[in-house]
Amino acid sequence: MTTTSATRVTVDCPAWCNVTQAQHLRELRWEGNTTHWSDSRSGDGWEIRHTATATADGSPSGPARLYVSTPGGLTLASAEALALTLLATYEEASD
Image (cartoon, rainbow, N blue to C red; front, side):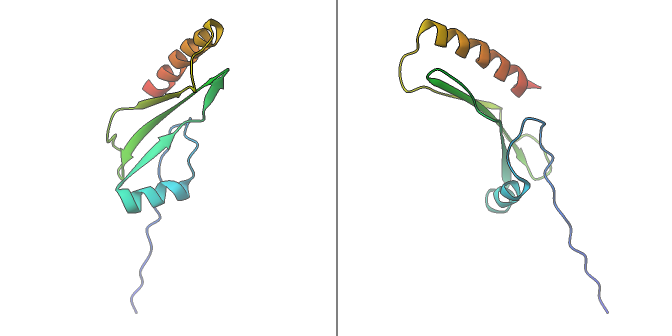
């Protein structure tokens, strides 16, 4: 009798990652790497998220990336809030 055991793969995520294990496993199977996405941070007319991509063994496969979206111009107050949030997001992504 031959006994086989399945190896359970899990992806170690940074504390800020909001992607499910199931999604990460699909990414690994189809793309060979996985992308950790942060929650979005938003303000009046803008949104920021950041990502980190890793290979199956957990090694980084590229630099961390910040994504900023805005539908148009910002008021000075919104731009200030965006700048402060961008700095906080940068610090979180670089940990």
